[in-house]
Picture 1 (cartoon, helix red, strand yellow):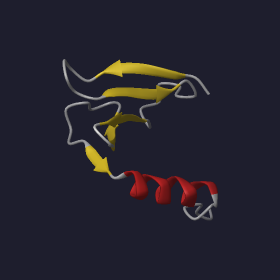
Picture 2 (spheres, rainbow, N blue to C red):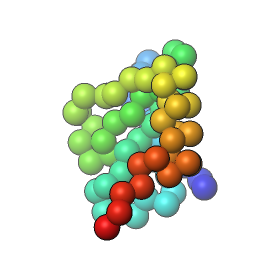
Picture 3 (cartoon, rainbow, N blue to C red):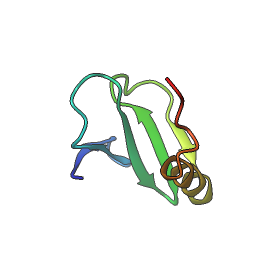
Picture 4 (cartoon, rainbow, N blue to C red):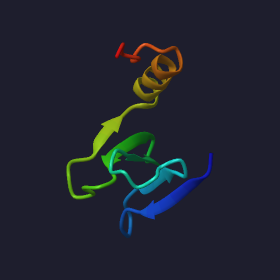
Length: 73
């Protein structure tokens, strides 16, 4: 997976969006900044940014890989 880098400002995080993002508006951008992970809505970059510690992000991504957030249709 390739990532597109989006600058967050002079000293802000450098957000990246997956190249698998097809412009449907259902994407998030992720950045690593000053020891934390920042997540924001790609279609509303002025909305609040969510911040996570490394351990919180690791727990979340491990849960995604394990299928903990898969919902039945």
